Length: 140
Image (cartoon, rainbow, N blue to C red):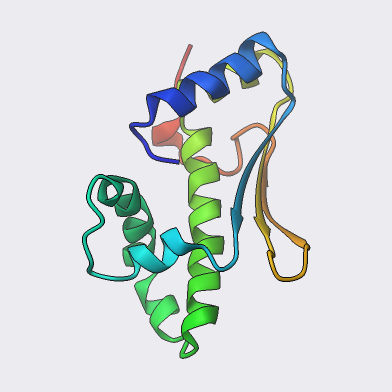
């Protein structure tokens, strides 16, 4: 999830606030071209602003990722780390935190295996208390 993607955030807001959605899923997939692109130094035009967030996740986890010799496995791990980070980013929004004050709402992070059809469950945040540093918690 891109921090500045207002269209996406408006969809999330409508879903949780007005439709009463109880489970929000952030789902990546193994073999993702965006992950591969983010791990390169090539320029892809406007997409570069979207890839920057994945590059940030790579940078934050570079030591772990560079210890993985197999490039496909490294890409898969970055996919997983990116999904977890994007779930955390979503949890930091006022949209989600305001809903948590009102009712149960669960955020899930999944990765889909295109090659085998399996979903790997990576993260779930129920109310933000255990997974969000206090600096990111809003007071309403």
